[in-house]
Amino acid sequence: MRYLFYSIIFLISSYSNSQVKKEAYFASGCFWCVESIFESLIGVEEVESGYSGGKTKDPTYYQVLTGRTGHAESVRIVYDETKISFKKLVEVFFASHDPTTLNRQGPDIGTHYRSIAFYQNKNEKEIILKEISKLEENDIYKDIVTEVKKFDKFYIAEDYHQDYKVNNPNNPYLLKVSVPRINDFKSKFPTILK
Image (cartoon, rainbow, N blue to C red; front, side, top):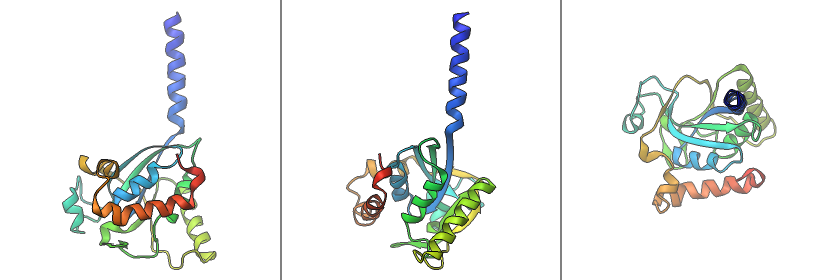
């Protein structure tokens, strides 16, 4: 009887925990940097680098680089919605890159570096569109080119792309491009950093 009681408590606890775990998907340039930005947020439990937004099944990094797969370097974010909202993730997304540059972020050029805010339901789409309107109306950005796209499929990138900044802290690209972008973001959102 005691075993049954604890099993039921465990199931209820597991069910409750699974209800607050959500996923969000964004593309905003090199995923090495984007992964590090979102990993630094309170409430974000996991970030994976990968590919999304295109048609090619199971693409490789080098296929995506050609621009012929339709995919963009993207991240999958697992977050606890009791600690951080989808709305806040969208705010971070727009504040941590330049959504007015078509098919590029900084020195990275190509459709695979384009800006995409993926939505999984009507509510998420409305949140994204409201944020775009707010940014444009307040003259924070003009002519945002971010795609607002229904999420379809996420393909996880090769192992060596995961936690890239942590595993390659002296990489020249990271030091020159990613670290300044990450530091700029952190200066804007100090209260929600881990």
